[in-house]
Image 1 (cartoon, rainbow, N blue to C red):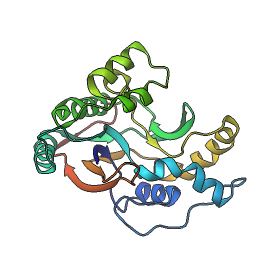
Image 2 (cartoon, one colour):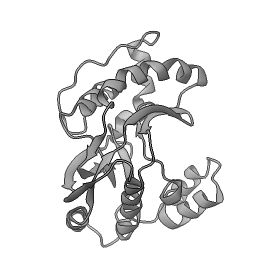
Image 3 (cartoon, rainbow, N blue to C red):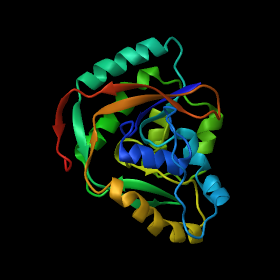
Image 4 (tube, one colour):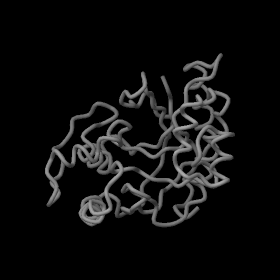
Length: 235
């Protein structure tokens, strides 16, 4: 059983609706429109290449999944999230763009956003007391990738390598792709998501997600509203 702190687009928003239909799953159980067709990719192929992000639903990670530490419980985590969110300013995300990140395709900000990076860093550090240490198997799995010294230090301290100065906000759209598939898919995805990401998007809340057992789909269990005035898209 694990929890994670994510950003998820507002329910019913154009990005939430399109993202859910593309992945084939909505984290809040809303009805899905049919998946958009992509020339050169059959529906079975699209189902396969979205399998990994479908389990997590459309989101951007702020604090990676973690098991609760001994003595911690969900009620205390919810209370801490409520207090944390009430003290944070809302953010207007820069326009999102479709980009290749390593072997997968994701939506990423088109401009730096220091306020967003700071929010993610605060989520990692403020809730670390709720995180159980990763198992040796988890550490070994993370180390399969070639980690930089900074990423290795983050893994040892925070249980995940891509946090703080190694963090990059992204909304994952595919699982790992062969280079040829990524090349063929990126332009159609840019055309598909362009209309719903043409303007800056508000980040008005953060969300607590739950994985009830290992390998189960993550589900959104509660949103926590950020209370302050919105900071500008460029930070």
